[in-house]
Length: 606
Ligand SMILES: [Ca+2]
Ligand SMILES: [Ca+2]
Ligand SMILES: [Ca+2]
Ligand SMILES: [Ca+2]
Image 1 (cartoon, rainbow, N blue to C red):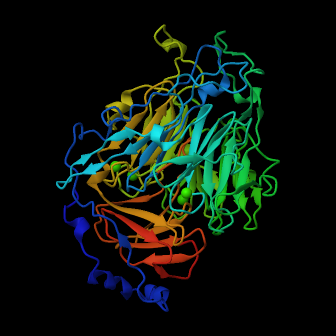
Image 2 (image 1 turned 120 degrees about the horizontal axis):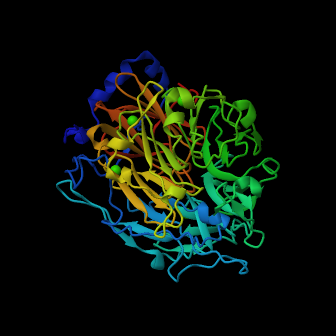
Image 3 (image 1 turned 90 degrees about the vertical axis):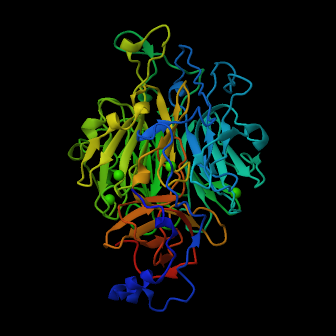
């Protein structure tokens, strides 16, 4: 258990012992004075008293906290393709209140002959919920959400699919991008609780496309976030094709029945003005039915790359050449197909250093009987399929996976895997009058044992993991600011769930928000090396993308196990600048601002 006083240790002389290491002396030689003092946020040192159900690892608190969202997929038996793929969710601090608010993407009802999909109800469209988290003096956390969609000015049009978050104009207020069937929408955050629809003005509305997962990423290091949008299939209700299972039952078609749609890359010319640079970046010729997008520096050259997970087609690994263009090296890198040469139905994806060797590894979620794919990076951007050796392949075979994240749910310093599952082919045994569209499955939690192998701990993860639903999007982040990762899940045609973590707080943790000097925004793509007193280092990065059609907490949460010593933190900013902070307090969130640390030389690797 963590001690109440751990978070209150002042930054003091103990840190100087770190300077005894000769290599550290070399690192800090010539550094200016005044650096290395991180800006402390309000201490969150008090352990959280046990809430109801705290003996369980995860408890669903959606309804109890006012997150009362029910997804509408509009299934009527006509099997229109977009009905099966929605939708996503974003965790974003839109009001800079210091806690994560929630945007949930809504579907609707699709009707042929209307050109644009029509909303199912007057209150349809995505919903924005403000987090009114209250932390009482005794440490009790009261989590409450208020639906602020109406006053926010966000009017989500059409049949929604996904969401991405990023501050497009560097004004310190996070902006919102919604993908959907028929058009996408960009909403600029006005900083006063309201948003303006700037889709057309920013040139990112992309009419007649079917966008799913998107990611903001500064690919050219100019300080402005660019935008990659993964598009799925060329499909209209008018050209809809009927497909049947072997049993004769009509169902949704496999993606191969339709032509993939070209994904889009928009370059931010500055101040949130975008230009379609898909062709200029060299991304216009190779594309597949894209469902998942994850951005990370896969070969450690300091330039952020883009991985695109395609549904039953080869994936793309867009390696950033550093001159505004990309090269798809997926085949040579071993991530176009799985280790057996099969193009699986990749849907969700996440990049993270699960084996703590300093490079970004990949997980993709796929169809039932295929088994998720674990691609292990050798440090140079070449990958090996370790799905079987890790145990992940076998464990995930019963599931059709969507939302996924490398998340250290127990804060032991090893990234675990949570996958959100739901079928795309009907489970005819479960079909009934009450359940005419039986696509339900259970979610899964796999614990990283630190040996390269994973253990299925779903049965121990809480009652919420016994429920079956049609899981799709999932966003991961610390929604109650208590130092462990919580999860918001969208279930197609069902209620959203808020899985509050009740186990991570048993270990120590480090919470970092990485912001830019001028922009004051989250520096997506920044890499962090956290070195503990015993010399062990873990690498993490600030990211909002990954999972499926969703946007995660951009803060970096690092599990420290039983170690309460203040670690040393090195940050590699997207600009290429490397800075170090000698000791950063544990069990609380600290904001590290670019330019306020000790500048160091060195590469992006250990
Ligand atoms: Ca903004
Ligand atoms: Ca690795
Ligand atoms: Ca773990
Ligand atoms: Ca939490």
